[in-house]
Image (cartoon, rainbow, N blue to C red; front, side, top):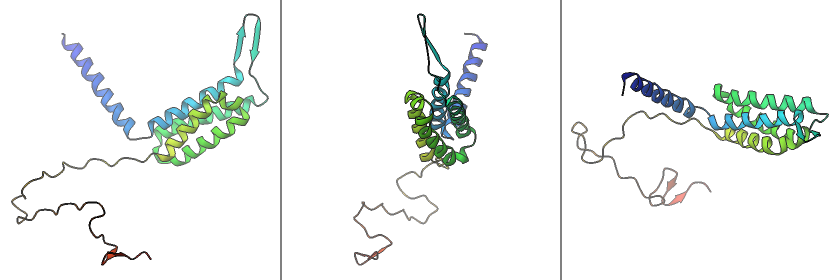
Length: 174
């Protein structure tokens, strides 16, 4: 193997790792599904299907409305990728546009664009950024020499111990 092929492999691997990191920091799949949902919605009203000598047009009077809805869904998909702070707005807008596309544009791109945009909007609304890993978890076993021989108490079994809200086995809720 030559040195060039190793360099190409390293660049490809580092590019793949950086894309994976970029994809993990934003609602990537929500943006992709929303973007893909906009494509059939804006395509089908302008499509011509030719079978032999017969031309079938799917054009409706709301062709411009379909185009606007499709373009907005593509823009919202890109917004989800590059402006992750506006994910709730973009998700709700994608859901509303998907619902409107049922009426305006050939049943939402024959339900294909509708379903993709609806799932993408739902994923965008429900996405939450992950917490970064800050350190290595402490090793279990004997205590470290500098903490006076104290070890952390064992975690209680769920429901077995008293919590902060209870006194004498009773809850203060009622």
